[in-house]
Image (cartoon, rainbow, N blue to C red; front, side, top):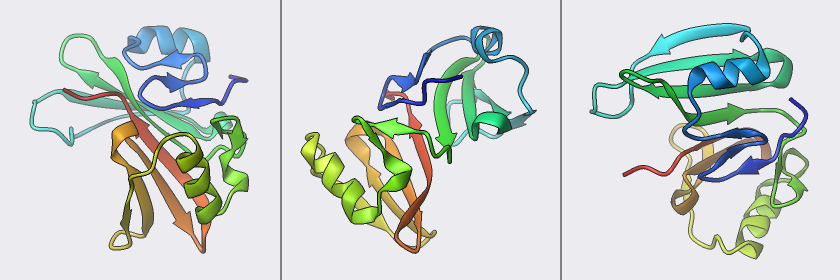
Length: 142
């Protein structure tokens, strides 16, 4: 994978939310690791996580019959959002980038680490000492 553009509510590079798991494996090849985890939602769906260590991200798939791409988690320093390499930004710079792109409202959570969430875009940014260390985003729900 060469395109690490985060597209909130849409996907990551050429990978789009809703893609079947087999299509993603066809594009990226076999994952470094694969595991099944419990769903965070009460819909009894299964969740499979494919880890791609060479690209520093994980892809989450949900479903019962057909597993479809639903979430991403990354710490890939090449990741871009709104044209900026976000891992080069500190917390204040990232908040400013989001505001410049129409995302004014966010929630700051310091209970489970240092996290800011932009609920309208289903995206969470995790920080350590004011530097971005992880990003988690998901498809539109409901």
